[in-house]
Length: 302
Image (cartoon, rainbow, N blue to C red; front, top):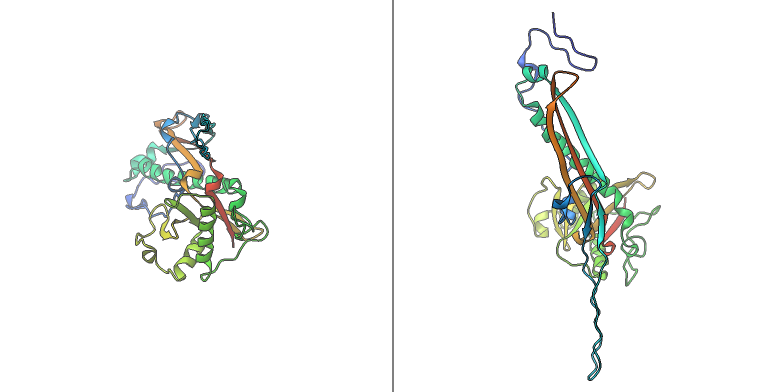
């Protein structure tokens, strides 16, 4: 008599054939995780559990005054309120490997599932962050009159996104760089997150190849494309999409503008109570915040 299985589970016959399981798992392509590369993650080690608060000290603005011979010097006591980063979000996974499955498989199922869970967690967290930060950028770093000094750049508004092509995408990237220049954002470590379609337009433009932009490194796990006008270009499928406009909030900025912290606080295996098998479960908690809005902007584009 063959071994029976509950509804939804594969049944195995008494004459088990190992070839039912492939000797090699099909390769799976994961969306790259870009958030750790574009944010400030200095406070990750201070997280213990969901609900924690991380206090981030800010640099105060020092006042520069004109000097007058014989005049009294005014004293400043520099102060800046700390930014609170609340670790108020979390995702988990909880899977079981039945003893029968473990015996009949020639693969380490839990190990493989753990690797997949890690990648799926990256996708969930990236999606939430990229869809959650676009509305918190500085008002002069988005819209039809972007540029805190000049108001000269139309980089898209809700209901009226800009249309980018292979002939103008570099111009828009340069305009976004100028928007950050007007905010006195540091030139080093700037980033730009584009969709795969936009990255394709970059490759078809006058640049055509990442190596011509000063970096011949291929796109790896975090979707890194290369350097353009002081921006490190990243590719992601997880940017905020607005179906009414068929447009994306592509993001650009500097790591000082976005604070992100995540920690795997639970990772454990244990015997299941209601059946014969091993449970594996994990919990990752995280938080994020636009703590310096002048250093982040959006290009709203079809």
